[in-house]
Structure formats: structure tokens, C-alpha cells
Length: 333
Image (tube, rainbow, N blue to C red; front, side, top):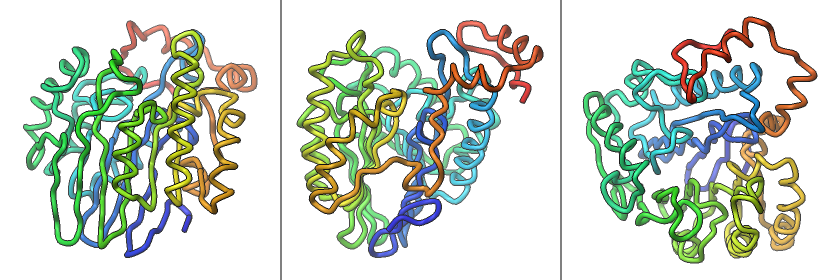
């Protein structure tokens, strides 16, 4: 059952989406509550350049709000899951207000005294994520209660079981983007799966693992259709559609967001699969739908935003401080 701010499942499980493209930022951050445990998955949120345009001030306002919501969720969490080491999925321990709204102090407050369950940065990982992950683990161990490499592991707290997938591709098999771990949380027979950045999923093996968990709810990252055909093969997008169809006929509620909603035509791509879901009495929705709030597809609307709401000279001067994606000063909002 969808309620304001989240989805209530059987046995007292509540799933609270915190940030995603459909509400204005790049993210798939989610809080899952069971009667035993509070689990925050992927506490990052970010922005990015689009068609050589930096984010509009309105996007930074939403990013600041989403970061505050994630920070509040962290304070009630028993553990924090990091599915992989891209900066829209974690808060790094360095200052950068260009796209991540991060600082050492904010990261320390977020992870302080929490159990960190994260992707192993030393195995089944690409070079970039190995470097980022190693730096993150070194820093987070100074503030966290403990740090556990999650790949393929299972943990129990009371009647709640947390099961992690083995490392699976960040999209297609052999991708240069590395790998991620998915999370299944089960309480008294009711299961929720969170699948960051599997992009559809693009491969059947990832789809199989999700279906084996028999989830009542799936939080899933969609395919990057906005990058096709230039950077992502149309055949991979078709494969993602085929695998998504397998999921929606088996899973009562699928929340599909992240990547897909960067495409202005995402509704056209998704419409046939939504019909398949409806025909079997299931739901295929966005994070905005799950939260009961209006959509804010700000990245896809960036060009229009700059026309409708021109930026100030002060903001334009701040943008010029961004060098290679970094600036240590906050945007003037």
C-alpha cells in the first residue's frame, strides 16, 4: 500500500524512498524498516552536467533537501549499505559542492557509529571503484561501528534476514563500470529487494537472483536509454526491457527509477511494460509515485529551467569556480 512518504508492506515492513531522478536528483537512496531493523541503502545523491550545462540552482536546492532527508534517515538506521562506489550512491569523505554536496564532516556524521555493509572494493571491481572504495573504507573505519564486506553474505537480526547478491555487473556483462551488490531484506516471509545500477536489469542472471528472492517489492535502477544508441547499444536496451517484463509479471510492486528518468522520452519506453504489469494486477511506479509527491524531472528539463528562471551573476560566477568537477564552496542559492 502506497502512503505519503513510502510504501507499507505486510508484517509491518515500511519502504521509504529518499532520493531519485523522478524527484530531482541522481540517486536510488532508500530506507527500509522492519520490526527488528532499520537499513539505509545507498545514502548518496548527486547531480551531473547535461549537454554541457551545469545544474540549475533549483537542482541544487532539491539536492540540499534530499541530502538532509538522507542524513535524517541515517540517524535512525542500524546499518548502512553501500552497493558500489559511485558518488551518487555514497557520501565521500572529501569536500565537493560541484555535484555531490559532500564534505568530510557530513560523511562522518552520516556513518558515525553505524554498521557499514558494503561492496568489497578489492574483488570483482574495476580500477576506478577499487580506488574510490579503498579510500572510502580507510576513512569510514575511523567513525563507523564496524565495516563488513557484503558480497554474497547473509546476516540475521531477530526475524529479519539481510542477504546480499554476489557482485553483479553494473549493467552489461564485462562493463567498464564495474560491479554492484543487490540487497534482499526479508521479515517473516515478506521480502524486499533493492537493486542499484543493474540497469534494467541488462542480464538474465541478475534477473534470476531477484526472482529467487520472491520479493513483494523491488526497488530497481532502470536502463540508461538516454545514452542509446551513441553509448549504449539498442540491443542492450531491448534486453533490459525483456528482463524487466519477467520481473513485473512476478513481483506485485516494482519501483523503477534512476538512469531511466534522465531520458525525456522515458514514459514512451516504459508504457508497454507498465501495461503488462497492470494486466496481471501489479504496479510499476516511480519513486515520486511511491512517495506520493509530484514528479520533478529537473535534469531532463534543465535547458527549459535556464530559460524560465535565469540565473544570477553571482551564481554564474560560482559556476566558474568548478574545475574538473570540483569546487569547495557551496552554490549561492
